Image (cartoon, rainbow, N blue to C red; front, side):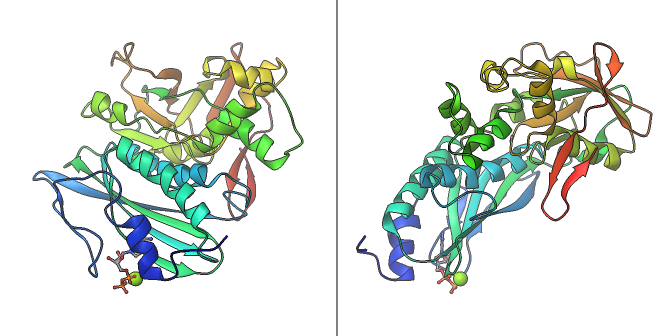
Length: 322
Ligand code: ADP
Ligand code: MG
């Protein structure tokens, strides 16, 4: 297609200037060598970066609006998993060419979500090369209240904030476009369009102190908590929240659905631990196990340890046997 925007600066002006939510704490946004923001008194700044690369995190036929959504949602998820409120983002885009149709779609997905979460784009970088998207996100958290992986305590209960497995199931349809089923469009949408649980930051702030987001799969990610906190855990696979669509995708095979829920990456749900006495009945969270003083993770079904082969994602090692 012919492009009206021909230069880097035209592109920034057209697509990225004054986008996202307008925030009072942004003193200077796009246009200078750096952006200026005010961190509220008594708060700490949280920073996190995630990159998405064509061919690794999405394929060339992916809907650009979904790619834009996913680029931001994976970053929102990291900030939320620190118990922080997301505030500002910067966006480094490497583009093979100026494709305005793609850019418009990308921006629709990215900025719709940015407005939903009250996040402002304050800067970035635009370069030419193989398609890659790097988002650096900032957030603020009351000093000393961040949720850290090293804070799990023996006896804590383990919770997740959403049904698990749908992202992995959606990926099956991405990787094999010939695969058809009644739940295909729902699961594809769940793979790309996650909404990290910002409301839980408010509900759980000051009450919990250990969390992470599920990006490499529950088993792999929970392993990070266990290692950092030097504890073990028991997960009751029968308590994993599973969607009706996942069960349909697995043709009614609940064991397969549970295995997917344990290993599914890019869920961008929260996994956290909380003192056993903390009442969380009113919140959209699911208790799936507890922290132990053993040195390992045990998964049970019908009260017995399972021997399923479970894998977590690793960019360089391909897979880890858990
Ligand atoms: P510099 O050469 O000083 O690094 P640039 O020419 O790269 O500045 O960018 C000019 C301005 O546009 C800067 O304020 C930068 O933050 C912003 N910017 C560049 N690319 C993007 C982008 N993809 N998204 C948002 N802001 C961008
Ligand atoms: Mg620059």
